[in-house]
Length: 230
Image 1 (cartoon, rainbow, N blue to C red):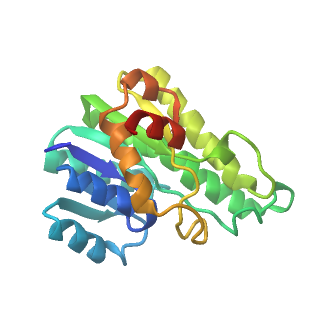
Image 2 (image 1 turned 90 degrees about the horizontal axis):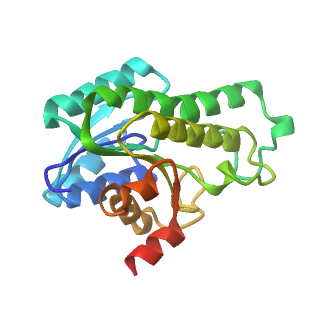
Image 3 (image 1 turned 30 degrees about the horizontal axis):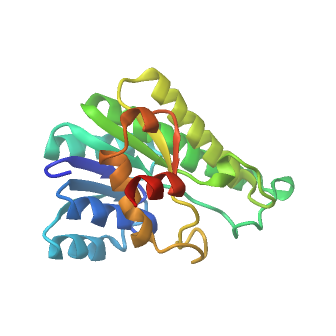
């Protein structure tokens, strides 16, 4: 990834911040965004102390104009964009504790707007700036493909994000795929799961090493990564 330009949404903490650090350590200039910016100073310090480079910018993926400005910043600073990671996501409630039958309309709308439409905006606004060999990665999880009790409209929104990824994979020349790192310990999962630092290299593998035909329109999971890298 040396001298590549990468964009990561939802990057102030958790798996997004770990991906930023991973990509920057590999030599990419990373443009990172989040809705809340309180943790950007710590992220910048961590990247720069490891001799990496990062630009942070507030952007709400629910607002396509915010996303447009983010991608324009990345293109202005680094030229063509080599990797986009559509990672921004929210979950209103506790994992497994939000059955669809009792979901509020407000939670449903915000899940779909952030996790589904936000993925659409991130990919759509990146298109004018993508390098010919760029890759687009969409972070997701198993509940998007196999229903589990209590995941409600969050699961619906992640299924929407995956459908968006498949649609773009069919429509554009650059590969667009889904990366499923399993359950990762973040605020969204209330601290349950794998350390984000443990799975961040999976995203670098998806961005650089996995055959494009395996990524495009498909789902890469932990087993795929472990088989390829062991």
